[in-house]
Length: 357
Image (cartoon, rainbow, N blue to C red):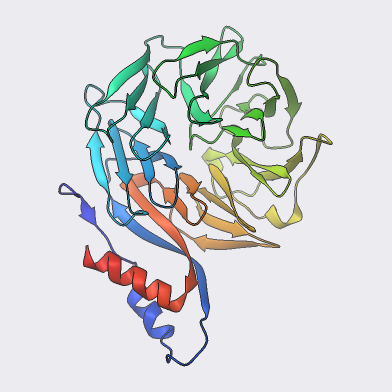
């Protein structure tokens, strides 16, 4: 299953279990959140594409044509290098079910690949060799309707649409861009579909959120109070949490600097605020809502917030995905992991399963 790639267990987890040892008659005690590393493909791979279709099936895409998937919540991984794409960076991936997967490459040439048999056979369903094309993210409204978007070409963000579950893609008119405005493919989370609204967040000379209430036909843009003005600055990702968007970013060249890197935006009132609890958050390439918590990641480490902000782990990771039960993370050096929160007994069982592989 691992095809020669390194399998890893918990970092320092033995000491953790000694600390949490308890007798059977004590009530269950909640442990976490803790970041648990599960897989490492190798230092040559950078994993930025990440999507969890449910609590079992997780996809990861990365550099050098790499693609991974797990069918058991990240315990075991199948590693693939997509044929005819050895130099592609699959920074955006999507699973429609347990067999139909989509991989989107950033940069030129830009490709979209589709498989309906878990990667046994791949079809190149979109190709653009123009140097100006750079695809940034993918999202779906349901199992047939979806979009891929990219950096502006001729004054508009590139926007592709599928109405047959990713088998065919057609270009439609994207939102208007300001000169120097662009998007980031740092995690594939700069595009989102939620509650009938398609949204895109941007950076560069200006940071904005573009909102479409009618599946990309019309757009409204709102300015965001995030670092902006330089190519390395802006909004990198967003997710919906508790009635509003949480939008994150910063300046990736100054990844430890807390520059006001997260805001809350309410599209109903068009009101946004830089929440005090996010004040110390460093540059973040991704954000995900998971129940009452919000998780952040970037090259300076991983964080989570409820009523306050906490450091989760110092490991650099690029992307996050929430399955409804688990938060997954992918990052540099081919790393994939999972956030654990549960009882000591559940943590002990997870350790047993991982160490048994």
